[in-house]
Length: 455
Image (cartoon, rainbow, N blue to C red; front, side, top):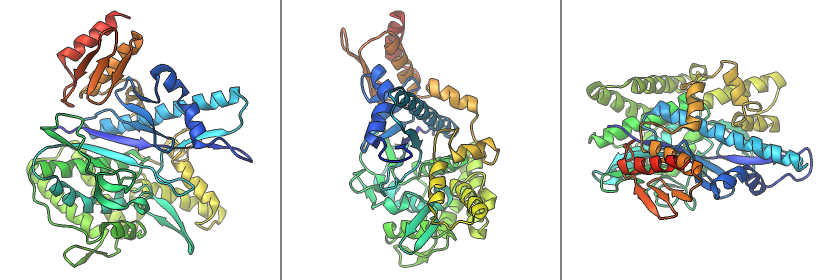
């Protein structure tokens, strides 16, 4: 089954000044979104590349990728979001300088701020509307809790007794396994039923627990593994019951233990570790793919999944320190500590960790590693640059992107959401796009052609 994927990333922003008070996050966001409001008449817009750009609660700029139907394509559009956000940062910086307002604007693809607030990276997977959704959540929650030993972004956790390096930034900020809320309780899986597609055929799986990843191979593993598991659920595969007794205790225990062997309580009264649980999922995935067949992406996912678990098991992060964020960042911090003789709690390491998530290639510690050839990539610069400008050609996003481009060029009053294209004047005309897999639609194409003729 083709699947539609999407990533929603909330970015952290700040204005740094040598002394005194810089601009607040709200003020920085206003400067960043001035160009957006100028052309879109709103701080909540859809872009010509089919993606959504908006300001979320707490003045967090957020970018939601267009619908993608392959993991590499999704990685390109996620990376395109960084480029788009970086352009807004540059425009904001230029505006500040023109107004002689001091301060340097930074934008971070991370999950926590200095005040302890958390913001997320949400994953979306289109599922067939078959069976009971509780089966989906019961199967996936243990995976989502334990996968952090592979796809966590890495984090310095400071407590009253000192500092420790952990797998995940997000783990300490989750409060429920499953809920219909997103901010009040912050669940691992959000159950609000908004498929953004034909509700009789599809359901959207909305995952809130994930870290924001910088390394492309980490995103490949994170999304690719979930795609395979979702495929197995769609096909009726019967998984071994790996239900945890207390998911919220387990997610923290696992994040804080870099050995992957911390024992967590299972619902059946036994004890198990993240390594054990992930190994059980991996065994079932391999058995399934041996029968169903594995694509090239599936094979890449399996290879990194296996090597990632082996690296944790052997306590040799060097095996994956070109691919998995927590290991890439750990190497960066370790080498800096050794050069300067620092303790992990030193504020300079906290700043370096933050710089890892800086999206500006000129100041980002992560992008310095990429430029030095120390981190692997999945997609090319050409693919990322194309994703900035153009929508995916294989999903509904192709129509949305073409409509936005045409309506803007024709200077027409229009509105867009995930399901609809609408020209508001002189006579209202709405086209519904219920099939996220359909890159063609006669009515939508006629509307786009008419708009292009007005240019």
